[in-house]
Length: 162
Image (cartoon, rainbow, N blue to C red; front, side):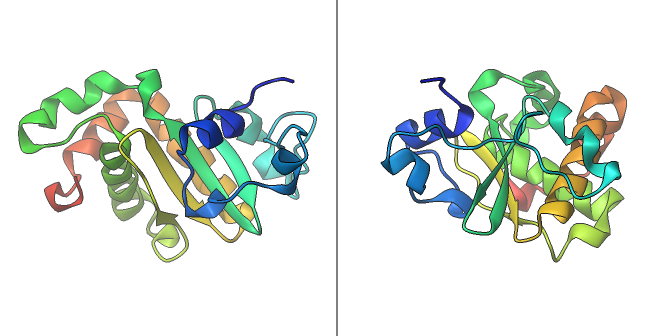
């Protein structure tokens, strides 16, 4: 059986509220579905970039869609150093603070739609609408890939959210 991100998160107990229980596929020993070129059923041509979200992953459980990042992978870990003295760490909570600053400063249209349920080892943003979460994920990933832009966004993160 191929191990997927969801399988690893289930085994480690790192599941956000959007996917907090074992799916029927896992109960019967089948592989859980993740967003890949083979399984993605995208409703909009604009969402075709969601297959290139690595190291982020999109998961679905009972109508709730989750954007997940295993922070132990070290993705952009060094950008958090500038605010480490304020308590901002490259963990799930730090990524949540970064995503909240991104929404507040660049994409306020997601403020009421995107929710968070991060843990120390995992960032989790979730939404009941797949298209909305995918749109957010593509924009957030693009911001993360622009080091100057993401560093500027991180500088605006509210210390109360760390």
